[in-house]
Length: 161
Image 1 (spheres, rainbow, N blue to C red):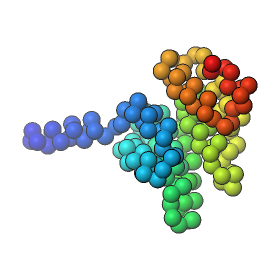
Image 2 (cartoon, helix red, strand yellow):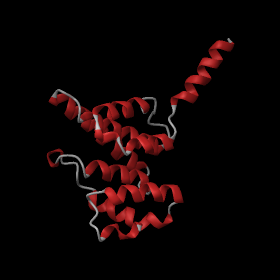
Image 3 (cartoon, rainbow, N blue to C red):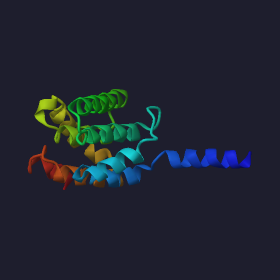
Image 4 (cartoon, rainbow, N blue to C red):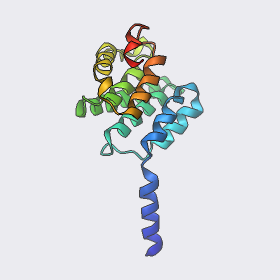
């Protein structure tokens, strides 16, 4: 009985990744297939009832993983799965700046043929308008994203400096 309880507690604590490690991984996830697969694995235990930011990162992991699918049908299905999940998270928490940053980072990097680029202006505007309200660590994370983002012009990036 004690063994079973110990295992259940271990699975529960090991199950949900911490946000700091996810943020750190996310910055390098698109650089290689191994990074993407590690990211998917790290978020595999996240369920739709977990913290919304983690669910958004899980959606991003599915979208990024679709890039490495070999079969076109699987690539499309995986992409649609990730996009649908990300949009549902945004619909449930539209004022979450980090979730909008995740969507922007995906939309600015997907091929135009996907049709998944319609929220770039909206998300840029939201991030710029609400950046100053964030805590210091989230500001730093957002700043790093904005400064490397190809969606923001040099002039538009001034709000993070």
